[in-house]
Amino acid sequence: AFDTDARAALDWLKSQGCERLGAFGMCLGGHLAARCAMFSDVSASACFFATDIHKSSLGSNGDDSMKRLGDINGEILFIFGRQDSHVDKAGRDKIKAELDRCDTNYSWIEVNAQHAFIRDELSKGRYDPAITKCCMTFVMEMFQRRLVYGLGDTRGLKGKSAGPAKC
Image 1 (cartoon, rainbow, N blue to C red):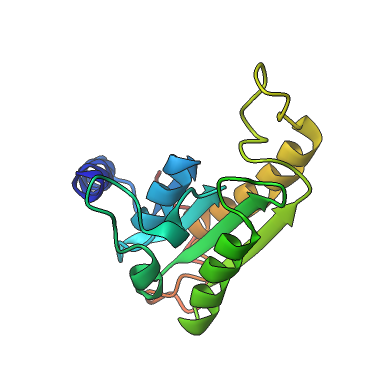
Image 2 (cartoon, rainbow, N blue to C red):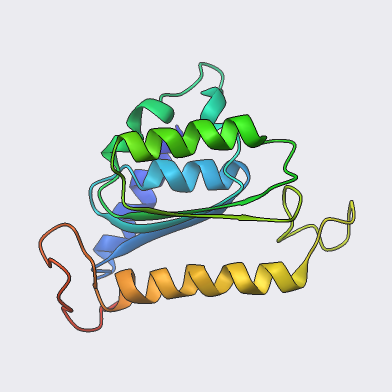
């Protein structure tokens, strides 16, 4: 149902006139944003601490996310905390190695923070506003470049700007 729901949301955005599509997610949502990047019409995805891609444990029957990282046509940004206990160093290394093997268009950022450092403002003491602000700068740069101006679009624009998008 994860992919079906994402596809429905992307199709709705297209029906509203959106010319370029992107995804953003944290934790499980980061994993789902990575899966959105596997749709050929998604230009950019930002994935904060994408949980369990390396374990193939999404849903009750598992998933094929690791095997499908080569299906990413747009650009993807992964951001992890180095002290993340949900996606440990071995898990991050596994994901990064597969992205490299598939020659995926990606950026990779690891910061000195725990899992969920962007959102745990009132719980567990993980929230780090300074690191969050820095990471969001990378997200906004990629979305501006890919979704607004269409720069670096691997589906036909070949690095030329198509001008501002509608959505």
